[in-house]
Image 1 (cartoon, one colour):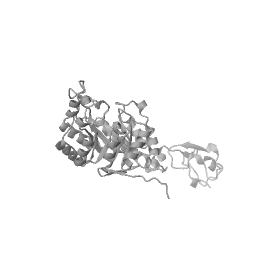
Image 2 (cartoon, helix red, strand yellow):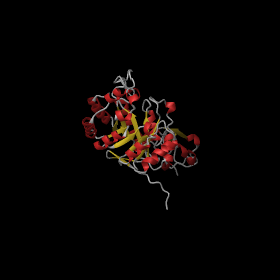
Image 3 (cartoon, rainbow, N blue to C red):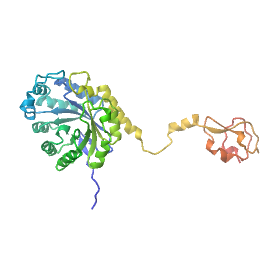
Length: 354
């Protein structure tokens, strides 16, 4: 009987995610499209051009999700798209035909199409749409009914762990694991935007140790691209970042979202990590050979000497370029006899010595 942990890979939009795979980058469009369908399609194209692996939206059945009181609550502020919270949320929703086209646009752009359902009705909607993966928001990590309902669909499930305890994360993991092996736990801090001193990125290492059989990622609400790079270095194989075309747009999420130039840099730096880590073996590269020859040091004769001369320390200088006997062999050649005449600043080689 073996106690070896079996690591399950995830397949999302044709891309395989596993521990050690290149970072899978999700552009969270959410409701940054401001209810503008054409803008949503443009954001998909722009995110794809930045090199992300997936785009993600949010789906709510607002009438069933919110209490009547919350739905009717006045929501009059600079970021509101309606007089009440319900009207605001309804303005940001798309219907069936629009979602079909959004998914088709994502696949035309060769990125996966993901979505966060906030209720069972939305899961049914997205299941019919045949999306590539589900994301569970931090606010639903204790919603075991929704977790189980999503898990039973058999699609990849990404779970944000913001505003939760370790026991609640364990409970969510167990709830999904009973029905589905394709799990990614995303470290998250539920602050918008999140300050760097609150990110607690080392918790990624804790999650990797606590849940060795699933993918670990990072859902960032921080501003900038540094935290995503650090998270990847700490073992986050998935990175979710909010995406916008203009951080000055109306809406609550734009200020901590990445614009296209930022998303391109985020993806670029993540790919550079893969390129720069290398094998870990110290091998002299061809370009370093040229460097050594030009800027390295070798042993040279200070003056002219005739064959038979016994080499003394004062006969030798250390100069550039390299290409001859390295300085660390100086003491080894002292006391040896010259076998031929040498000129001043002649590059000393072992062939000059007896």
